[in-house]
Amino acid sequence: MAVIGFIGLGNMGGPMAANLVKAGHQVVGYDLSTAALDAGRAAGVTIGESPAAIAAACEVVITMLPGGKHVLGVYDGDKGIVAVVKPGTLLIDCSTIDVESARKAHALAAARGAASLDAPVSGGVGGASAGTLTFMAGGEPDAFERARPILEAMGKKIVHCGGAGAGQAAKICNNMILGVSMIGVCEAFVLAEKLGLSHQALFDVSSTSSGQCWSLTTYCPVPGPVPASPANRDYQPGFAAALMLKDLKLAQEAAQGAGAPTPLGAAAAQLYAMMNAAGQGGADFSGIIRMLRGEG
Image (cartoon, rainbow, N blue to C red):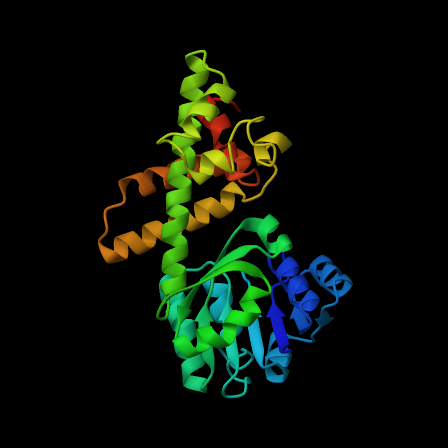
């Protein structure tokens, strides 16, 4: 079993680190939040002095941080982890960040002789807790094979998407699909309500017809048809609208850089920006149905 450093023990990182402990790994963690450190300690994570101190002592270092600037801030500089890791250390970044920052992180690792992966996840807090996340990995095949058994302790589906940055590219494309499809499902339910069609009737038809999609069958945005969906808990997240907006913005930045037309992705980003501006960024992203109804 490996000695694994885990930097970022928040809503996603905390449960992921706990699953590594359950799998028998020795996990040394760090976070700026006292509450996150306390939760990690309760889950069996040893708390480290600093990211650099952890990186110097561990053979694998995982980061789960809010954005590209945070990842590069932890990686780079005199107090960064890359300056102190031993050659051959495996660095796995599970954050969702822009492709350019991911590639910079790979370059920093390579200059030190460390192996690296960008390996963002899908599955939300529920998947992190249950150990059923999907990992989308970018990096060299050897690094991926080294990381696979570690990722399998935290996830159910592990996919090697290609070279440096490919994991982040897959994540933002996937979440653009998710954001667009959720808005489409919400619009259909709002129209059904106006036409006098019950939620259950629309669900029963569309969930077994050509309108079937994950946003409908697993994360239905109205109460009732899918008991596990956030709609049955007053849209407590799951996956917060603020995080969906972050991912849609990353997708738009990538689309502009690549010259790819994404009109529906752009429209979805605008609608989630409106939801966030209305003070609903902390609600589940499926709660955008309330805005489409004109509520609030």
